[in-house]
View (spheres, helix red, strand yellow):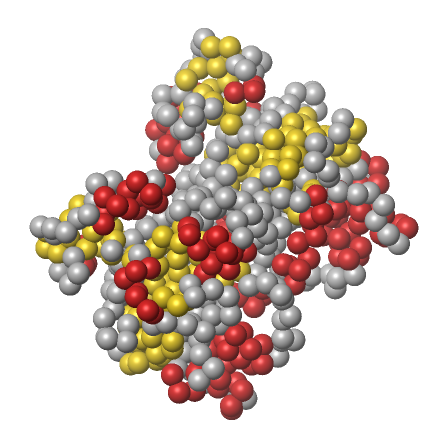
Amino acid sequence: MRLATLDNGSKDGRLIIVSPQATHYALAPVETLQAALEDWDAVAPQLAAITAFPESLDSASLLAPLPRAWQWLDGSVYPSHGALMDKALGHEPLKADFPLMYQGVSDTFYAPTAKVPMADEALGIDFEGEFGIIVSAVPLGTPAAEAHRYIRLIVQINDWSLRKLAGPEMKTGFGWIQAKPPCGMAPFAVTPDELGDAWRNFRPALKLEVQWNGQVFGNADGEPMAYGFDELVAHAARTRALVAGTVIGSGTVSNESYREVGSSCIAERRGIEIVDHGEARTGFMRFGDTVRMEAHLPDGRAPFGTIDQTVVQA
Amino acid sequence: MRLATLDNGSKDGRLIIVSPQATHYALAPVETLQAALEDWDAVAPQLAAITAFPESLDSASLLAPLPRAWQWLDGSVYPSHGALMDKALGHEPLKADFPLMYQGVSDTFYAPTAKVPMADEALGIDFEGEFGIIVSAVPLGTPAAEAHRYIRLIVQINDWSLRKLAGPEMKTGFGWIQAKPPCGMAPFAVTPDELGDAWRNFRPALKLEVQWNGQVFGNADGEPMAYGFDELVAHAARTRALVAGTVIGSGTVSNESYREVGSSCIAERRGIEIVDHGEARTGFMRFGDTVRMEAHLPDGRAPFGTIDQTVVQA
């Protein structure tokens, strides 16, 4: 089942179910994805029962599947990315026995084809291609062995980042405010069964193709997460109940073979350049630049659709 | 004008206007505080025009004035607290030329008289008495000189903290997830004019009396913030627009004279003990413990009402 949200002028949009070819849709029996998630056990069977898709789908009319959420918790669980960044930035490798995770702005997730306003090119504008999940309500203290039951939908995310602000904020230990403006989401939120065998041990084994200004920049595999999404949910829920619609991210997708498969963010490529040449050679994004992200199953299908966003001056 | 939210069984409750003596109330012309904030310029005059309060107020029926918010950004801007904690924990003093701020869970603000569920006494359960403000929508890039215009309401907050988890999370640079469960709020959100001369340079010059299990623990003055709330709003809005209902906090209230006036959190008292005796002597909270927080104007009035919360096992 693939769900999307039509722009109907409201903040939360209008929930739709998308046809297998993503050419048509049907209106959902509940108004919004948030409402569906709050009553998932009752609503999901109604959504799954829909097999007629009477309306033509115009992808330009889609918002993020969840245009705003009560909570966005982003992990950073691809070890190759962390190790490279520590090396490039001269950090002591972090020895945490738990997944890295920060809380980011969730009142806005940009539409897949949004023009994304940024204050200043000098701030080091970067994309981060990643995967995420959306849960129904998770009780406080839910262990990983049970947490996977609350993973209702899988999404594809572009975590916009401002790198010049990230280092100074990270040094405070307080996490990022200015370095992390709102994220974008690909148009379709999918139930785990849509990924078939590519949903492995609560990890998305899909290749995430990232293009910057039409050139392929990376095509990394989503599978090698050091912690699965089940573990990320349990980590987040250890001391807080998670409300329905909480979104949890993987962090920028990265593989040990980044020199071959490329990277899902500019910062990682710059890290490789620092390691190899002693200096970063690739600049950050400029106003007017585009980023396109599309995750592919082994058979070539793109279950989440496509992020195709443009940076504009705020 | 003092606003509060009745528990009517819904997630956002029912907005009311409270009488000058806080004995009676009138229903607001809009359903929720979030709705009022989204249309503040139109709604505030309607609220201010209400002078008849027909209903008796039972403070036990009140939720947090904003029972959930799209965003909670908490500062840490009392220099005496930061300097003491650096000294006690052996940290290098942080030299940031911007206010410390993290994003915390905002989908829940506990009611003023809530029983607050905590997973485990061993996690170092602590309170933090602080002040906060709530804004209407703030455009991206709003400078401090204009940011104060969006400060619509002032609130009093108890920022629940789990100290044993805080240090390891802070070392990651990613901020706190597990160490910061939801906060509580005092019952009344007030417009700045309610504080009169005690709202000085966008800082609350009120004494915040904190009692732990009925014993006075601290009575620090809210005024000596290194950054005013105008500057905190501008800091938060530098790279993101703030949606209506965003809550921004001061961090735990602290004065240079903490040995005389006491502290607004246990961690600060333990820090004093470490500096004075080489070890912390005060333990953290236990299940069944209570914390009471009430801020007083010079004439003794408590404009925000009283937080009186009890820790219970989750």
